[in-house]
Amino acid sequence: MEALKLRVEPGFRREVKAERSFCLLSTIGNTPLIQIQQMTKHLRGVQVFAKAEWLNPGGSVKDRAALRIVEDGERSGELTGDKIILDSTSGNTGIAYAMISAIKGYRVELVVPANISEERKKALEAYGVKLIFTDPLLGSDGALIEARKIYDANPRRYFKGDQYNNPANWRAHYETTGLEILRQTSGQMTHFIAGVGTGGTLIGTGIRLKEHNPRTRLFGVQPDNGFHGIEGLKHIETAIRPGIYDESILNGTFFVKTEDALEMAHRLAREEGLWVGPSSGAAFWAALRLAESIGRGLIVTIFPDGGARYPEYCLDCERQKKRLSVEHPKLKPSPP
Image (cartoon, rainbow, N blue to C red):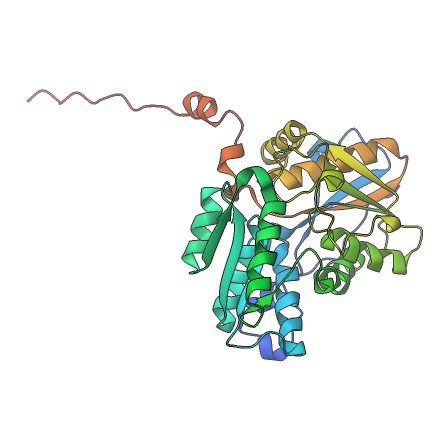
């Protein structure tokens, strides 16, 4: 298979509406497509690319869905200036809501598991978001249930973002992520693979890619069990099933162990210069397994966020710090 020659776009050119030309929100989307080179040297006839979603202004792929959810709410009249945006999140969607709402002037309340990383808590607090913590043992499902209770108790007070069931989530990717991938690969991609959290990225992008070429093969990535450590991903069989997740369009699902996802994220930083989070490690682990099982193809996956939000997942950081750091010898005063 000939190496794909990507269409070169100068810098980070954005195609945006005129009214957004000087707004931070105009920089959401149009993320680069990066070829994974060092870790795929053993492949013949298969190329692997990843969308660098951590380069969105809010730091993750969730900027796309959050913006569409907010703007659809505005268009429908359900979201008005006197209402508070409410949703459950493990971090990234919440940060996206917070950034967008700071620009648009909305208040935000987020229900989150109490064990989200300190970096995510600090980011949300910096935006002035009200946080409601739930039992960490219940994970994202516990936060989802609590958000429903809060909304049902006072529906007039809130706009319910409901990222797990709101079709605006997958439509954001249908209208942006899918089109970008088609443009960036000149329509040559053969396989798409992405993690399953809400399902929005996988389903929305997948539907668009299948419309372009029905032979495109789609794969999901899930943790291998319900007690996992890959933030942002769901083990569907043991979790509350997202309403927007439709596995009928998929050709298969890869199940990844937490330690494999972390190890792959570690390798991506060391071998490719891509400092990404555990869910990106999971996506690439699956993409590599897929690549090794086919003879020819062009695989695209999604790297949802960067590694800066997950310092607790840095493998052997203390050992490396000692090995790579050099302590300056204490200088003796020069004789008079």
